[in-house]
Length: 352
Image 1 (tube, rainbow, N blue to C red):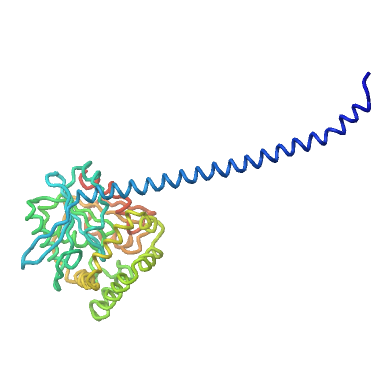
Image 2: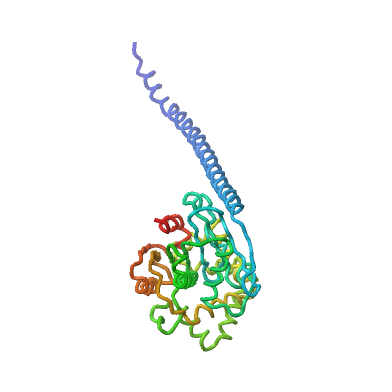
């Protein structure tokens, strides 16, 4: 017969059974938590290993890329030494690169895969006092054009695509305007314009200040670049970080990339290694007399970052009025370093 008491005992026994289940669940949950933590640790370790492998691969690739780019120097007129970088010997598409202000011929992405893809021979010359180029007290915009022409002639180069970045854009303009028959295209990225009273309405405030100082108080201008050189060489990381903190987001992202950051750092050190005198003379040249040549007109490409604070969209408007048939491309979210993020796109457009 069915027994009510036994049933009651069974009912009373349920809590004990429930406690056992709860204990089992708690134990399982603890184990599950440990398993999740372990899995998370493994995943984190995997991510770190992947990131480390990624960085190592990038550095190895950088080393391989740099090994194909040769550092050379030669003597030009007046027995002056100029240093330059070169990739390739027989490629049909030759680029001559004019570096930026307070930078050097080292500041380009040394991606030889891109050079090979587009059959590029790449030449980048250090201006007076930059890198291992001999410092010359008097070196005008036109002198740099003549130096470049002499270097190219010594290498047997008869036709080039000109690539000018930042202040290098102004030097590139002079070269193309003076030697138009030797230029297949003029390519200006975040480019400078002449520092003169005539162009003052287009110039950002910092460049107008440099223009006024060089014209009326050159001693103060020279002291500024000497002090910055001392600061940079005395406390490199802090000075670079201060500069990075002042950048727009797009530029900051580029500068914090391990390889791009190394390129930028190397350029700054090669520019300011001689107490800032080379950069000062460079500023003097930028403020000098602008040669009156007919504007180069065969093929002109202009690239501008919408958030560039160094050479703003207003300065590119000046260039568009000078090179009326140019192809103008603006990247609204990019800053002054857009050439480092859009390198292949720029290279490709130069020969299309």
